[in-house]
Amino acid sequence: MADKIDPIPESSSESPGAPPPIGRRDFFRSVARVTLGGVGAALVPELRPASALADEGDNGAATQLASQTEHALRWAGADPSDWAHLRGDADHNVVIVGGGQSGLGIAYGLKRKGVGQVEIIDAVEPGQIGVWLPIARMRQLNTPKEFIGPAQTNPALDFRAWYEALHGPEAFAKLERTPRLAWADYLAWFQQVTAPKIRYRTRLLDIEPLQDVLRLHLESDGVTRTETTRKLVLATGYAGAGKINVPALLRALPPQVLSHSATPPPYEALSGKVIGVLGAGASAFDAAATALENGAAEVHLFSRRSFVDYPVPGARTPNTASTTKRGHANVVELLYELPDVVRWRNYMQRQRRVGSVTLDTIQRAVAFKNFNLYLNASWTRVALSGKKVVAEVGGKKHRFDHVIAATGYSVDLAARPELARIVPSIALWRDRYQPEAGEEDPAAGLHPYVGPGFELLARPGVDAGYLRNIHLFNLASRLSFGVPVGDIPSAVDHPRLVNAITRDLFVQTVDVAVHQHFVESSGQEPPDPAPYKAALRQV
Image (cartoon, rainbow, N blue to C red; front, side, top):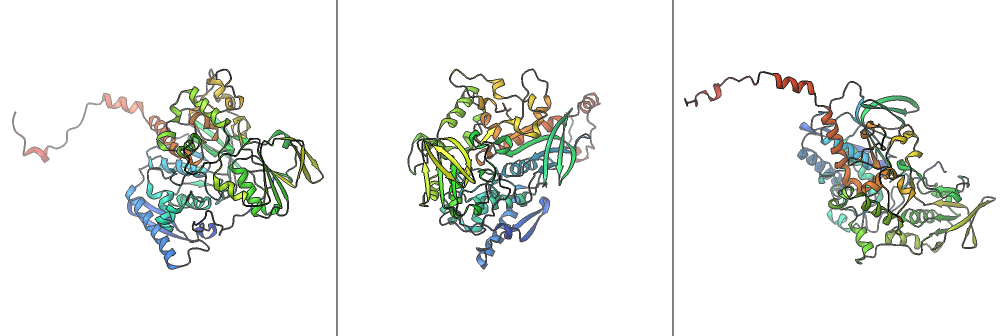
């Protein structure tokens, strides 16, 4: 695979009529420190886009955001004191693997619950956490702009408050959906404001259970070390659930001519070339459009389906309704409570449907005359002829300089090296649920059967109680929770995870011996009656 990621232009427009995105290089160029009495000091960046915030009015917007943030933090009150005191055998209360939108939201939720000694680790460099800069190529997010984000119940710290402070309520009202680069900038600001402890260039290599704690084998800045934690959260997105899905007939191709949409090529290197895209979901159209925008001579996109689904504006079809309602907090946070058979069938129904692509995403690619779309077009043979990839589709041969597989991810915990030690003990859906005849799906059976707090469970007959201290907040929990866990719609489940961790840590702090002492004590020592003595009367 290509080992270089193309830079995203700082001044690129994310949606028609939307303000230019915040420039990441200038985003933290100057930082205002806001001191908030009992709340302590929080870093609030002065947001100054490279091209947009040059006049006094925009400078005023940055000042407005800083003031608004100060009020939000002050009104929320001081963070509760850390009551979850470390035990002698643990270095951390909670370690969160992954500092993207999920890791940030979970860390913030734990802080507001009074859980201290929480650290996020991430393998990447600062500024490259998550998918929105290094991987994603959509202009707008595929989810509604009003979705709940990492700020949860503090609307003054959510995306809308941030965006309106910079651009005004009218600008937010005009947005069709959230611009991708604006979302990336918002998350960077949210990280600065909530100030979680993040250790970069740190990778989880292995998880070793040790009685009541987990020993983590880490590689940090090239040096291996071990640390212990009471709780571990795997907020590792889609890739952390298993592996990228590359169809078998493509696997023999060398990385010079093959990329996956999750490990994108340097798109500028595709200029003048003929590109084949396999897949017809949103990421496939994004990859095709990005290649064309970078000067690709031709792009050919192949779908094995007979049509491309998209939400029709104003239409009230079942497909459109399920798309627009997807992610409503009063629905999504309850999906785990459904019976196993319903959760299984819901997952099967989603897997068998044609994935919906937003209309603007389709139009972005179709606007190019050198974009070509093929339906009912499964690849049957692939070979390398010199430097060209030759694909046989419907009896015809197509030649490409480069192929991009936009074919998603496979859920398979056994493919994750950091889980190798514990995978044999983890309960999978195939261990806990037997589908009815005609509803079998071996791939779905590989999904872990996750508990109500996203905790891993042990296979029947296996003694592995330590698994309850490992919480899986990534795509592998999708079947159990009904949404792509780790994506924006699953933010409504952050409180469920935070509450589960808080509950467990709270119960563990109970000292039974101390409570026995209370029972055996002689009772309460009466204080001096002077404050009420004058009002005392005889019975």
